Image (cartoon, rainbow, N blue to C red; front, side, top):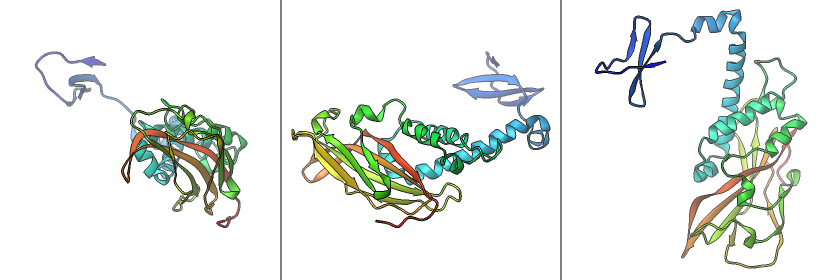
Length: 255
């Protein structure tokens, strides 16, 4: 790939060369790339078609998942979160042993034991592990819609300049990755804890109704806020973590 120097300012194609603008400079390279007809029909491009099919499926699953968490992800403003979620579902789809390469599906991979390990290690923000913000290990009883934070103590939380309180919410998302029916969301009551409080450690329990869906994800959302009078102003500092998920062969009733 060459860079054009001089007064000539040209973009487009000319005599087998392509000229285009990148970072304020004209770049020149030989015209080439994939041929659409070959990609669709040529046997040499079978792997390309397989990868493209699975990529599109995982991208759609990622959008579906992100939409279900839109209010929380928007507040956190995590960079490249769409790429992180896409990679998560690509890894999960590869666990599908029922379908051939090119047809592997997220909903099938989620039913494997290995999927739980992948999801447990997933971080929405690769630059800030959830545990650095929230140094507690929650226990979850998904079928009962209950999240327990043992020995919770506000003094153990990360200090954020200007923040006066922390807000916790347990979220249950019901999803149907196979048909992508509208997601269902149930949340616990918002719990607000003063960061200035120096109370003894105690178990904190968050409860939410369980949505009826083939897949239910449980997440914990943590937000730092500054309270001025009767108003709470949310900081971008905080976190979101998948703390568990379950698969269901039949609709479960709300508690």
